[in-house]
Length: 350
Image 1 (tube, rainbow, N blue to C red):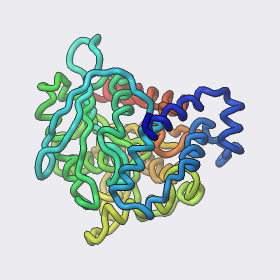
Image 2 (spheres, helix red, strand yellow):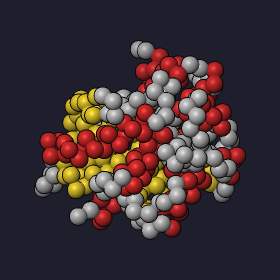
Image 3 (cartoon, rainbow, N blue to C red):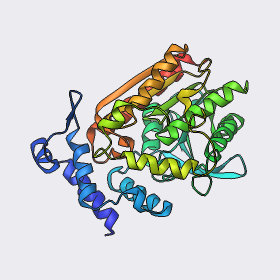
Image 4 (cartoon, one colour):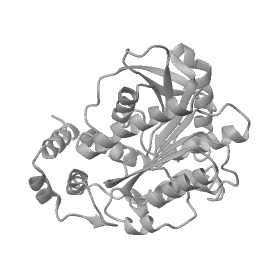
């Protein structure tokens, strides 16, 4: 048995222990803002620390990608069985690898489609690290999912990933019927960096006067690389994503391109005009340095007239979509997110 496989088995076995035992292994409960971190999530972080996960700024981009792949293999879980097939979609400069997840039969007519952008700071992650979340969203929302391997930094710095996301959404509209999906109910979404890309694409399509997605799903998105927020200070260390990690990712993504960080394609919260955007589902985690900027974006969307559902999962940490194999709370949150996405699509489409 390989190391990653052994770690995965161990993580799931530990997750099945009684709560008092898990709490003892995880250490003292972590309380902030009146919330207590989920004991299974805390145990995942403790296990990760004991495995000797190095800081990102000590790694090359290739090593950082390997680390995220190991993390996902360890705690993502097996994922529900849904039909998939590999395909390519049109990126801004050429074809991109993608994976189509097809919902089980049962509903009449074509289903909605979600174009999904994985997290990983625009540097790490791919359609394999986020396979389990996409399977869960497909099954529990009853939607097609097309997960896209956009170009990543630093080999392809900003705005390559943005351009690929916009191109992928256009591709989805052109090919929805071929996939068996409903072109009138196409959503775009993602987690962390992927949530950033999703809402930036919505802004760009709206400003260009093009057909906008029917909804946007933003799971613990990064929305402002200029402002300062209390959660960034409260959770600068010890909650999976650290302040040093955020700085490292940003350096890789923007680097020496010369683009200012208040560019709304980097910091979508700072856009001059947030009107006319698709209905939004914004999800945050209670123990996440990105929590407050994500919630600030949700409030800004509401103020601009965009129907917005904001859901904070107070006991969870950044990256919880990929922790469903080790945390029941993460698994339940993913199911709830899927239901909220589908309800939003059904309410605001057509």
